Image (cartoon, rainbow, N blue to C red; front, side, top):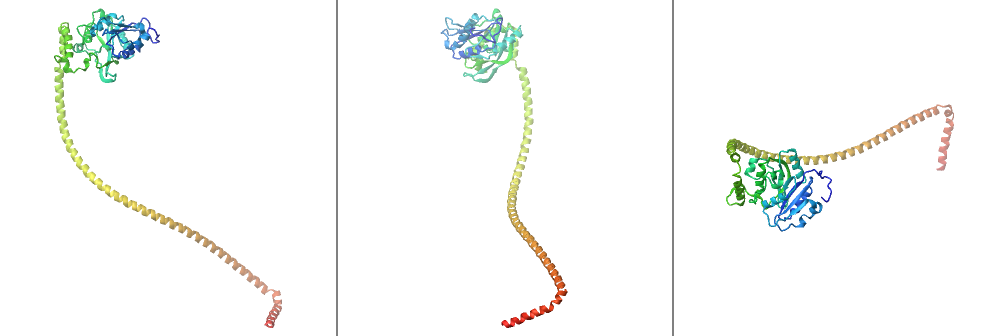
Length: 410
């Protein structure tokens, strides 16, 4: 490895070989990038040139630049089928654990680490596989997920494990597991059937692998009818696998396989369930009829209430109009009342001023009366005084002289 990796495991960590059968698809760079970011190390890649035409260096240049000593390109003398390309990869792999990754698929960064931890925790298990999500040709996730728990009998009926989901021990190769090169479709199914005779396979219920639809053997898109139709390519491939294994399986294994397809008990239970559903539907129909009648009554009542409500709304509008008129009249009356109150306040103030003036006049009058009485008393004093009486003759003489001078002037 050219660049150091802080997360790399000790040198004693087992080597994992990833075999990539490539037909020079442009998605190869994405597949290799998913290996490049794996949290587990050490890893080697065996890149098998299935077309024997050379693989474009542009597709693996980045990986080679950083991990040149851990990627090997194997170019055969002639084009190889899928099974032969897989065996070529196995022949060149040196890892203690192996897996396949076709050039149009990819894996999550913790895919290898999770599966290896599962195998280390279960030493008797020699193969483990993750759940897989199908994606579109453009790499967009779909709702389809391969997450079937391991069932060896079900595996005899169909292949439910995408090839790059599995990490397996080299021990399986030493027991004779190898790809049947007479099969170019379902070669991986045949390989897992071989492995299932050597070990149980453990399922990790986590999606850490991604399967791109539209590949060279996209058997998952075939309808159930096509799988069993005479003359269909996929049906023929299934027949070839079953033709091989019918002479290998024991009577007990075949009986298990037939038993897994015997749905009589399920059908009987389903018939009872359907019967119960029919009865429930009958009860629901009766209730629906009653509910329909009640609905009609409710609808009639609702219509009556709507009409009453409409009349009430009309009455409400009349009341609102009357109320608005009364409000306007009340507002005018309030304005007039305020005007009258203003005028009354002015009259009240004038009245107060008149009262104050009258009080002043009364006081002045009383003062005048008091002064008059005082003058009268003073006159009385004067009239009764000795000097007044003594001066009486002089006053008469003065009046007399005054009257005579008047006549002379005339």
